[in-house]
Amino acid sequence: MKGLALYYLTRYEEALSCFNESIELDPSMGAYWQNKGAALKKLHRYAEAKEAFEKRGNNIWKEEEPVMVFPGNMKI
Image (cartoon, rainbow, N blue to C red; front, side, top):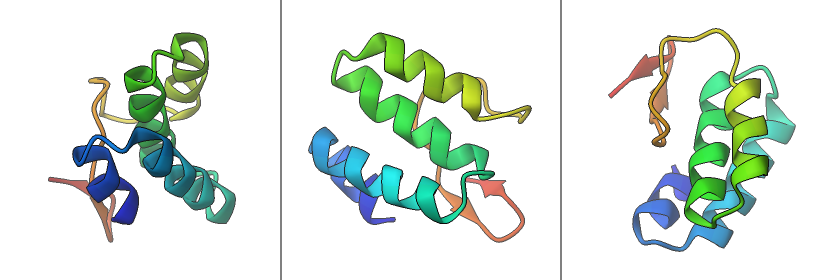
């Protein structure tokens, strides 16, 4: 949640740091990779963003914006 707040405050470097921490805790969570990709895209680090979006796995989110995840992987 902190990463999303920072993202929407346009503090993309700080948000990226939070998203990286989330990935360290659970690299299988596609939404964390999605959020990392969105932050990297805002930082114009397109090659890295593409890699992050590819690592999000086979999920329903195809747009390249951050997502909020709750138990059950529900997107809001």
